Length: 116
Image (cartoon, rainbow, N blue to C red; front, side, top):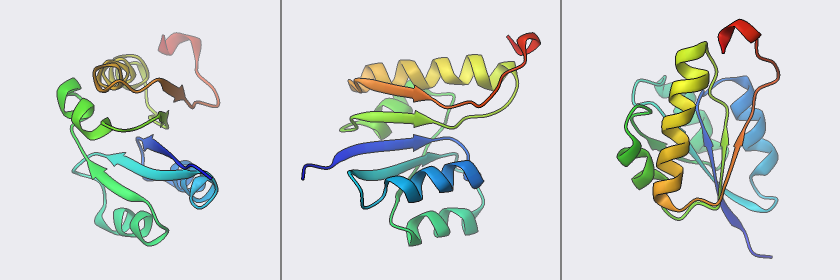
């Protein structure tokens, strides 16, 4: 079975960890793109369950492009208000495009209309 290189970008919280656990060992090599300011314990937990953790500046398209090189898909679990849901997602998308990533899946269960 060929495994794809998949990046989970964003938070180190409950949702991201659940997605990583669901994907590891199935059909994906999972990398997690997190901010350099993320909690070290949460990063260690992601590494212990088998993810490769990559730190990066979510406001720098070129840095994201370097981190995403070789990925087939990005699952974005970024969460927040307009500055995150629109602006940071746009930077992530542009970085993914620079890296040649063919798929990006924005994951959000809900969004308030006034956030847009």
